[in-house]
Length: 180
Image 1 (tube, rainbow, N blue to C red):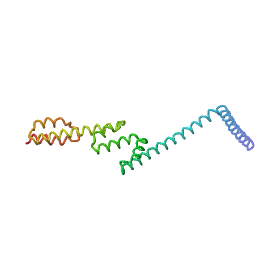
Image 2: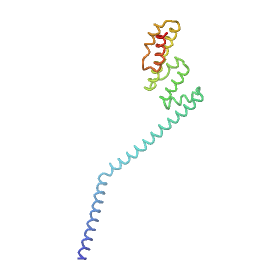
Image 3: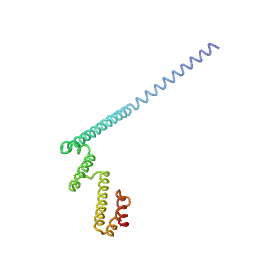
Image 4: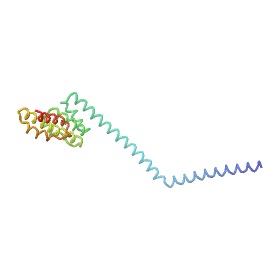
């Protein structure tokens, strides 16, 4: 039995070696058949990876230039080179910076020149314009109360929306017109 079991083991080893050799031949045949498409796919994958990394690097560089330009502008607002760099590398940040400068200068002409290419910036500008409109209503009502025209002041204070940031002030003034 010992000789028989030895022969069986040798046969099994040979059959497993044959299977391995057969799989290697199948793999070689597959590679020969699809050699060009496989190389093309590999090249495309490498090119896509290199393109992605290059684009990522360029975007990061542009953002760093824009951030550095903004830092320079915070120290020296009249630096035209930094302003142009910011405008070229990050137009949205340039628009926000322009709005910030125009709003702080309280110059209507400067506010009208602010580029409005960003939805966020449009929302900020709309919010501020509504806020200042409501603030002017409260100022008018205060002057009317001061001059003794409480009914006119009430009509103006009612125009301030309840969801406004200065609605509590309007409610206080309205209450003041009722109590006095």
